[in-house]
Image (cartoon, rainbow over all chains, first blue to last red; front, top):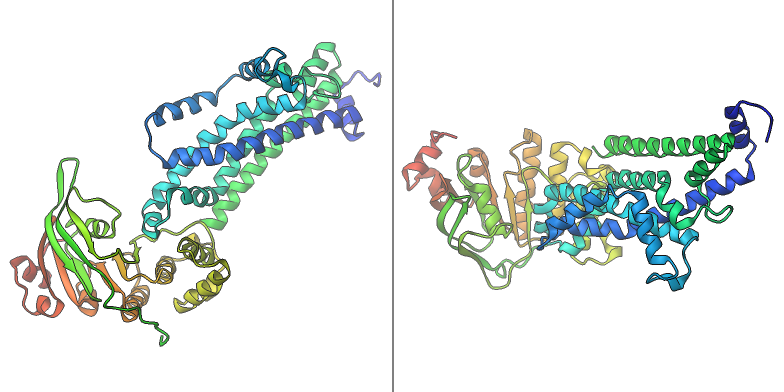
Length: 234
Length: 241
């Protein structure tokens, strides 16, 4: 570390110099959060679409629950996964606690309700326009799921980016189930907490800047996708 | 247009609406009516706004279930298609809209594109195949909806005011398409506001007024000698819209 008292400049130097610690932490963060979003999307997209298309008893309660879970505090999700994966827990035998796998599981739980609830909204709205035409063509309800998901693709990209934003920004869940082990489960948010409390402000600030840039990038992408869809598809 | 492969006419089952009525939130939108449609006729459903024309189409096509009475095909239900006043197109290219309809109808994958291109050609849309369907003009969208219906090879085609929002050239294209469908052997059930259009296209006329079926006559007789006071007022253009 340099003796330069200006933490900001040091942080910049770490980023520009591709500091290996920093790179490792950023890479793991991306791996964990992207895997979580991918897995959550594979479940939540069809789930949300099905929820938009089928009427059944308890549907309203399920929708309310999904909406409520969008605001699930990450530490609570972390605690639940911790209890499941701890040695004495029902899934303890897999030895997943304090591994990146556990962090992915926790983030899937955080992201899945967001993607499912927003997908349900978007697909239901689109289906309002399509219902008569699809019925006229004789499209079965199960077949409508891929049709509507594809036709809502631009809106759903934004939904998935929102999920990624939540996953990459949360600290509570990955801290509890990952344990912030150096080189194993340390991600950007947990590292920032640790380095700040240690007084290592340059690394904390550097990570903060990368995180901020990432969030900005994600939002720019969401904006661009929306604009493109507007322009190209009317 | 001389490659019109005819569909077997005699085989189209008759459609019988028996005492069909429709009530929505305590309001009777369609009073019980009987109607029989058979053969390869072009039936035009006419009447003022709110007469129940669109409702009748949706009941006959099976998009809505009647509150009373029943809609019955005498024999197997035929292949059907419907063209709406505001065309509902998927957020995909013009070509993809057509291949989708073919996929739904079980056309093998490698035959979809050639068939879809042929239909685009027939409806004068060949140059637009890659364009997103939603940015086409109103007339082009309606022609694309007709092309999609064409690929379904319907034995019965429903059209709900397909020309209400179109300019004269687009209206002509739609009417030409309706004639093509008919020549191929498709039974037509179409609603319109336009008296002249009905004169040009109809074999027989169904007149609805205030949710009641007032008259169902062959077109020639309807226009020359309407059987009901509402019918004659309508033909003279005096029935308030």
